[in-house]
Length: 415
Image (cartoon, rainbow, N blue to C red; front, top):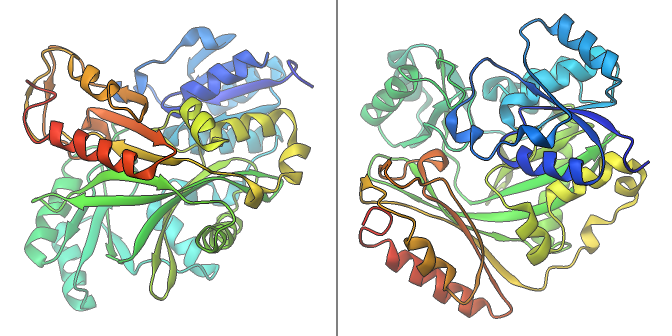
């Protein structure tokens, strides 16, 4: 019933901020839980404690936390972003609340474990292994006879420290970089995952699951570039029409992935490469897709994953009966990642005016701060932000995209 839901949100950051706001607007009684003592500043931007009835902070004693949530009468525990997935699943299991399979909870956070579980269930994944030593990784690469590989942290998000490598030298350098750094959550990378680089068209499939019923909210097609250091950069994304052959193929594959990984009661963000021989799982996170503006997606595409998830929390029966293949998409929409190539200081945000003046401008988010250094874009965390372009005429969207990239061909953000 509307307004009676008591819900705990673990790490209500990134898209979790919108989730928390929506829950408050619907009258839910929400409580915030922080999964770790410290949170990366990127995720803290825009966090509003006022969206919650209480912010319980970080409690390292899970037994104490279970008791507190039980006393509050919490009916659901959900992750706001990737860092909250594991704790949300553990708390749901301990409290006897709807959640995902507790015995597979780590498969949604540890990319090595994810690949092992998925492969054992018949899902196609890239060949690969995790290593604690860079030289050992290079030795495996040479013996495996692979042309190209991807090196990345075992646990991370937002394309953090992801490298494409085509030879032993670049792989050795990439593995050392990963092993000598911390991931976006501040945890040391004690191992690096090296996987065969698969080629094709890459997508992300955002879903919402309830009691094992999986519904597709959004499917977007990626376009990426690679910089001189072998780092993949997000360029733009476009939605795939629901019910199309491409969409149906991705839906069927993703449903299998979610079943195999034990994702039964949560949103999920799944990345898939559609190759000549079929779909290949890149990775899945049992949480909302990050780096998005759900309000814009609702307006331009009809229904965002965040809206679908909130509606399912209040009315699970609605989700189970929802026909995701019948959703309509009648506009040209492009999500464009902003890329800075000229390091320097952000003098102001005047550059926003030029983007907002584009005829197809539909929304924007930026983390750039006047007076702060902005280096060359390497991942989502150091990007100036992202923009939505939308129009009935797809040619106009392409024209405005080209205009935006022209802006970036000179010092635009750091002028």
